[in-house]
Image (cartoon, rainbow, N blue to C red; front, side, top):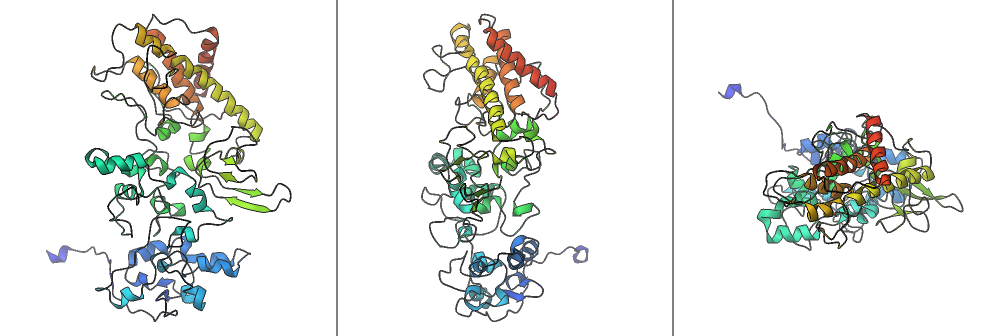
Length: 506
């Protein structure tokens, strides 16, 4: 039987190591500079193989070829104190030995001499997956920052930077019910849900409010390498809910459920791809996308707008000011007085208050003014349709007879409860409520929240057919005003003319 075993996988192999050029720190660096073989990789052959195909492995050559290499750049293109727990000059910043060139294993994990000297007694040094610009305790933040690559500074202003406090609290107090929510709301939970088995400093810490991780760099990017550009764990060009990185989380609940009155929850992916929402009986459910969700016109899909990079120059001198790297994850970010993109959403939707570079740089929209005009027009149509369906007058999140819109009139006039979770059907009223929560601006905290931009045609169509279905199902409802009827017909005509091809809203 032993002779039948032909497949082997090498996961560990003893190998000699060279004395560290910087003996004080214990950084080993390359075992062979010429071969690009790290000392760590002599044993960790799988990680060596992955790492050798990505940008960290030739960071030194990249710096030298940049045309603007400076001595202060070298620490982040080599093994040094930057990125690990070492807090004083070490590695290349101390001895300038070529064994330390490139961003190697020890750049993040820290010195490996103690471990390779006594591997049974000293555990391998672990890297951190947290990212924090406020301290120099060894994270991605020590190098991926600054005006030319402010990845972590921008990330810290994004909602990805903080674990959802409410979800963390629920996962701690009622883990049987809510622990699964950590897969999208806490860094370690996401890595666990995605089957990541690599060890790291924070991996086994008991979850608490003080140590909960946001969706950090290492959640989306695999430090050891992957088959995707940018070392991303999943593709950003895959137009499927299962394969797209962003849609691993932004596609949680996107159609009504028979036994729950809960509305949508992060339905962005399905809306983007033209499948999200409630379709009344008889309405064609063939996916309908706009240019935004077309992988041919917009290959990077979500990231095409949400991770758009652009350069900011001084308005007076024209000098370089900032290379924005899109890690605010806002497609049209607010601008500070100097024109730099900032986090938050407390500015108007005007050409001056926001950057529209992700739109104008796509080749679809001519300039910011044209984008704003299209955005405002689509927003106005959606507001008209959503207001016709439901206005939550008392802001309690529930449809009441005292609210405004067709659904309030259904509550007041229908002979039976149209919002039951025990009748085994999705009523027209429930379906329309789902759609207006998902697509109506300000109706629901976990709706699509793109103001229709993810899919203008689907958004308008679903609200329009919801209005039609309500009038058909509940004949006691008054006929809509002529202006509303015109908007409904306009929305349906756009969807019909678009068919199921991709059409740009300009």
